[in-house]
Image 1 (cartoon, rainbow, N blue to C red):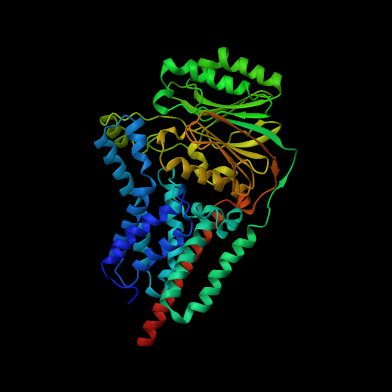
Image 2: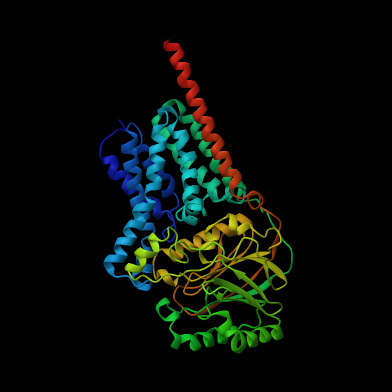
Length: 501
């Protein structure tokens, strides 16, 4: 029997998790994602809920074990932890997030066997949303839709965003299993599956937004300062001089962008001798600067991760969606105590708030995200349709030469496609890139090189359907579908009992 309770399906589930991660950047074997999910769903057939949970957990171990292996680099190389401590924390990190595909498997198999393959896509997306948005400020990494930016399914992104497109990916895998399982349904399911992908290919031809002005010339500076050298006091002046020199060589650009915390000092420490002269020089040359640095608040423990604009006008954005265990400590006081014992140094920032005015450069407003914030689709649409482009400043030097910079760039491309706007992504060590409104990378700087990436972009106006709706309507539809199927299942069971009586 194709789907059975043999133990080799445990091994297949683990391998499927690895294959799933290979569908993401930098590997980009996009069609491994539906294949891996098909193997996973097949392993849930004709077995118990607890066995399915175990196989879902093995899938998570394979996927997150490879996909977030960069956590070790951050904790060990730059966080100050020893090899044993860093290895233990990374292992716990992988084990924790692996529970989410495991719980998905358990809930799916608990449903009636005739409907589990209908339930799987719904429950998968709801669990992903809980993991990606609601739990611990959200960890939306390795969402299935990110792997599909080069496939026909990407045509759905401007309509449905990451979670809606992810639903169609998982639905495709579920339908694939049903095609193998039920000969009588092969033709209708094949037509249904083909329709989903053909419609996606057609949707890719639709342009949802339009140009609202002449092209503007932008330059993004990749300073390439390693994380272990960045905050050393003796390196501060050389760092400032490097960015100043690279900026002065590009005064012909309309907008010049520095990466996250390019200035390794508080705003108050560099305002007079560095930023004010830079502001005047930018104004004189008709350019606008977008720079990033930490900003001290009014209270003693109030610190913001900030972006400021210089040139035609001054403005400040304070990062709002903070990275858990990196920029703030959830689960206090337990987490703080543990990390203190392990002597791991992490930040303690303050969120900037939801209602901040848009910054402006080259005469156009833009949406600002700092590093991890671009992983959240809903955060990327606040300020539309007023914003004409997107700016993300990032410091992925924390993760060295790992999978993370490539995965993060792929996430940024999703934000461009969702909003139908250019994404200008300036990073410290890479991957600095310019991404078009269709999600394609126009230009990308080499990793770990000091360089300036210059290109012309077009200010965009209009709204994609996703920019109007966000994620919540998609999630609401998933919830309604889930309860509808549960009600249907209960009715069928009750009707069956009446027949027996």
